[in-house]
Image (tube, rainbow, N blue to C red; front, side, top):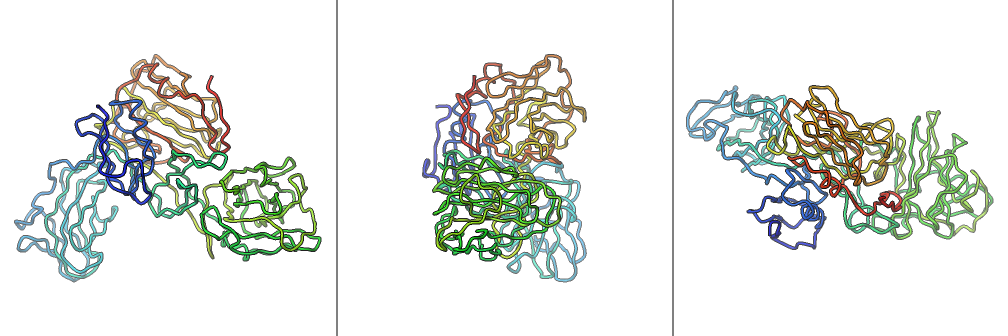
Length: 598
């Protein structure tokens, strides 16, 4: 079989902590070498390949990942055979530029402990922007004693440790450099630099972050680890995840899970760790209505203005309705019915409620504050049509459950950021530089994406095949003013043609295919060809060499959810594009609402 699959272990029983390599028949055109630490979605890449065998040059589905990379298909990871370093075994005292305290003796490069200086080799055959693998043996004290650079010592540094080091990086010049990190003596030997052929995306996020895992629970993932977020529809976790990419956001609430740190306003109380929370542990609190006629609420004052979004996970107890309000800006409130999963009809905030399963809902609200200080108030309401600040008496034991509060600058709530004693910032995420120039065709092809946005009209969000810049590219994007889809070609910095759709893909998983070929440019969305230009004669003049979830690996990263991104080196027919982008129905990823394709 062309796509028969051979596996080294446990196919169909993925474990989130990884279980080894997976690969296709090496004689087939499609080869998948995941080299993954984590492999979760056993159907993702297989399903895509089964429907479109032997055609894509790059394919990424939320399937396998390492720290710092999102794995993709074709080409297989390989280190090319050509050695780019001269005299890497230090057989002679030549070819290296030696700073003070560096020498070549007895077949090794030697640093002696005094001052800081470089050992470098210039004018070697490195191409800026391409990936290379360094191997070097270091003998010295334990710990980081030396750094390596794919360029001068002002570029990105890679720490070397005692023993064999294997490091992959991107060249910034035709020079390599070693520089001591401490003043401890050490030696290096067997230096090798070779080009790496690798279609994987480089993934970057310089902080931890949370996701919903395949068990439907909120969990924290490590720095630079991609987030495969599993959608919940009517509280049921779905089998196929999406790669979620978000901008940097800060949770300004310093105690997101310890509601005893909030102020009672004026008659309520908190019982800590009452029930199991959405992260699967017993750390959710109970907000209890006191026995006096008063507001049954807690509040927290924060310094922030402009567009703000507040959110909390809530579950019904003896009471069904939780209310958000701003205790300082008195006109803002919204009610959430935790029994029906609906928002009250009389509100002044833009509310959203998401079913997290097991009776839990994530409730969020956004509004614009003109004051520099707001007061995030969580109240028990007697019903979902209650006006703001309705006082009533409880019995001192009845209430509802809360977990994971967040307040952030911006027009929509992003994924949960836990805090415990101080505000916490989740860093921005990027997925860039998949493929090489061998994987793209400058004169024809198809860029395909199945994506959904996080919000409409906040910033432009871009996916491109490009030449390493924004001047020459094939582009699919979501507009910053409306969130609508747009597709275009950039040739020497000029945009033409340009298609802008009236479809708003907010929270909707949308399939988009952009075909480019001389006199044959088209855009097909969800099974329908919506745009065609038969007069296109100018194509990107640079060499297309990267697939980026960003504009030219420079600006405007794609923030949203990605189910698939792929590249075809040949232009597909209209019928193939229709089949590629068609489905019988699709779901709003936030509400689960089904939409039929007509």
